[in-house]
Amino acid sequence: MTLHWKLVVDAADPHAQADFWADALGYLVEDHSRLIEQVLAHGGAPVEATAERHGRRAWRDLAAVRHPDDPYDENSGAGLGRRILFQRVPEAKTVKNRIHIDVHAAPGTKDAESERLRRLGATVVREVREQGGEWVVMADPEGNEFCVQ
Image 1 (cartoon, rainbow, N blue to C red):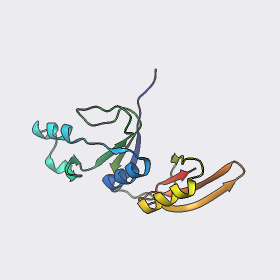
Image 2 (cartoon, rainbow, N blue to C red):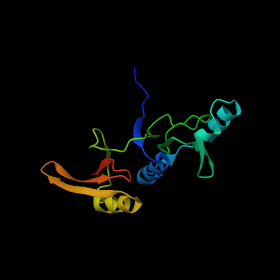
Image 3 (spheres, rainbow, N blue to C red):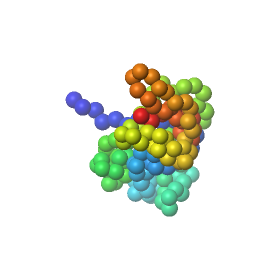
């Protein structure tokens, strides 16, 4: 049996994180507005649980990105393939990630890709050159480490 999964990332600002990662990966920010309007119409959530984002209603404490080529549920807007969900948490990040994303740049473009990600709001943590390869350790706008190879 194969299981469906998504990567969930704790965030102080899930919408800013979703925007960064959508730009970084070429993904789409999921549009949950259709589901939200249905839930609100049936009294399933208070309007305070939502926010206006990109000209549409979004969950205040959740945002997600999905690969543009993967299927998605038209009712909920949720991706059914490669997907990252960002959820608001009250505490700040305090230690090194135990899991991270590796971004694979096209051959010969690692430096240019690292610079593009820096312009989007990432920071360079360190550059690694080892016998096994070279990569750049970066941090997204909330300090979550990821690597560019």
